[in-house]
Length: 267
Image (cartoon, rainbow, N blue to C red; front, side, top):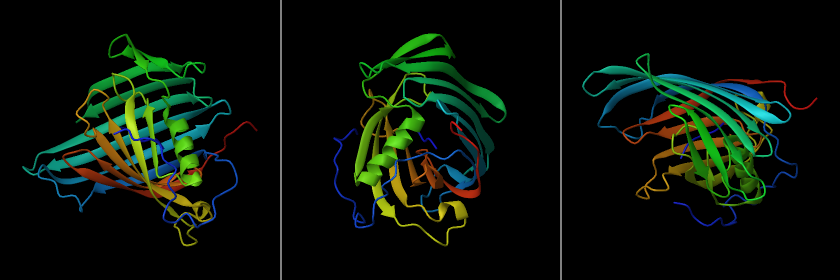
């Protein structure tokens, strides 16, 4: 799962729960399909939104040389004035595992009408760590990517590795193809590490440690305030079972309701 959008120096400060044994094996992101139920976050009162409910379907597959991701999102919102509207998006990507190439397509709609279509590809030069994103929609343009930029799946992998080492923060530029102006600075705070939960609703996740994180996304030319924030509980295989998406005017929580592991890898 990949999230969106200050920058602090990376510090390997031990977690409060670091006494738990850290996994010795390398991180391997699971090919899987996950369905989430979305609802308005009642702990975050909104002056603009009365209710919100929807669903998100997320699928990632390890294609040996790269990962493919498909994400579909629908949210039905009712404003305080009683006006209903629907937000939806379809997001498809392909990402090479060495972090050098990325293809993306994002289609966003409001009440059934397309309001945004972003399509293109990006590359990172392994020698310099810098790169560029080439857009073909909504218009043709090329945008530079700063040194150290990660694409979404590699960001998730590196974040989990940092959490397993006991790091508390993980700042890095991320490019996910959801904006027309290139990468966003991100800062991830790794809040806690949780031991395996033998009572978890998903049996496949019960033996795995997990990490609660909060990711803030920043416009490099902005005011220093985050554009967007998301809270996630990641398991050691990259699966997320809890989400909290803060859109500014309101926030939405996501709960994992269906989970299926998919075939993937080089075998």
